[in-house]
Image 1 (cartoon, one colour):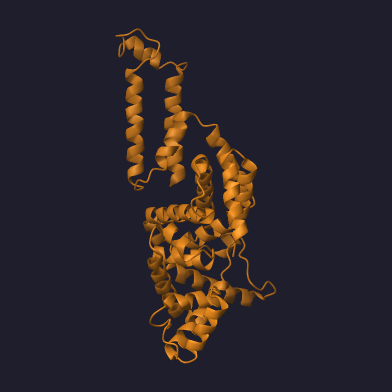
Image 2 (cartoon, each protein chain N blue to C red):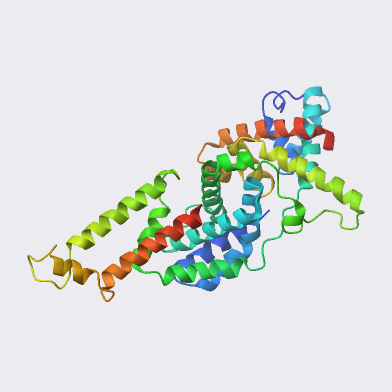
Length: 163
Length: 192
């Protein structure tokens, strides 16, 4: 009996590879010859082959017909996204535990909001934080505030989508 | 199993995607979409979630196009992303999955493909029951064992590819697979 190989004791991957049909013909014959004289290997080999046939029976459901269309729509939306939206989306793909992502996202949004509140482009130096500055920041024509509001809305949507 | 020529073609297509050729991305998608969705489905057991995660896999492939280097087989990289996203999802939704332990009823999901289509209703019910047992047995495996089995059995990946996808050694993969198949042999012996 060939004792160099003995899947039951030494080379269990041979059992797996045999049932999967991944052994070269010579290796396959070696396993079969050994199994003919080794009861434990014979039993395990038969069991693995039978399991393979059982697993073969499990089919998967067909993929939705509009899978590609939805994917390409998402790709197009990403290409058209503003840099705010790309930043938020990038942040949501961080390797953070799920529970930490909302906190991290809100922290970033808070920092950005603070920065926007303190920095008012186009205003005279020294007037940051004055009522007139705050008022001008609140106008609908200020694109920076609009972008921030849009990014915060997108953040909520993205968080909802990630759930 | 995918031929060597086809694997090289995957890398060539991805290099063209890197240069802005979106038609090549569509070809890669067509080639690997079903396998990725099926792999994830067998992990998460919910078709809608599987498709959502599979879309995220391909989105990440697309986003990484400018920095892609063919240092490994394309399928190795693809299943590494898929495994990573799927295991993260499973980890994040562990409590929900514990509450919803039953698999999707057939009437609420897409039609299942049976091996023998010319069957009576009773035979179909028996076959569906067998599928449920097989799904349940695979589902009961620890996550890494489950991922290793699915990549090995249904995606026909090599040990080295599975090792890279699971970020462990080849010997660890062989150990995972041996333990997983041993568990499945015992649990599904009555079906063979």
